[in-house]
Image 1 (cartoon, helix red, strand yellow):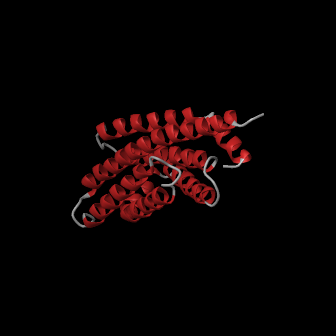
Image 2: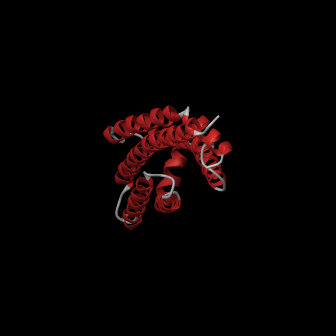
Image 3: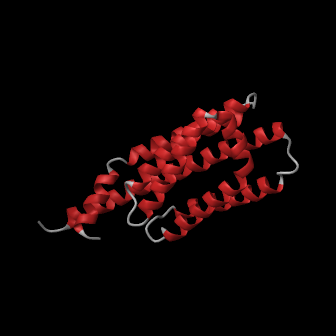
Length: 199
């Protein structure tokens, strides 16, 4: 690793706790969502807006620490999530129905992204398998949701979407916590290499 790259890694490692706090917040959201009773479609839409907004913030944070072309993908994901959040706050009922109709496709897209990212970063990320497992689980959930399109009525679909939001937050929470410790570990390694170099 070049000295400039080590300096960037050390700077990013100073903020490892942001990923840790973010992961804990995602776990709290998952706990709240999975305990929630679906009483209102509008509530589900606003809740989705909150989740999409937090996802956008996470993607911007990830884009600031990942190298090369991954930055572009994380920024694209951030824009998509922010647009979804905005729509969720402005038109919560429409957000619910839009998500209900394309939920399987969204899960397949996001699961594939997680799998590709996990496999591509396995040489530098000791927790790459978390992305891989998350992606596989999201794709399995996508097939389950797509297969149940004709079976579930509106009330069951609301519960299903809450279930997805809860597990999405759960997966995101664990991946953010693992990311925090990965960034911290890389920063400590970079600092150790610099300290070992002769002045």
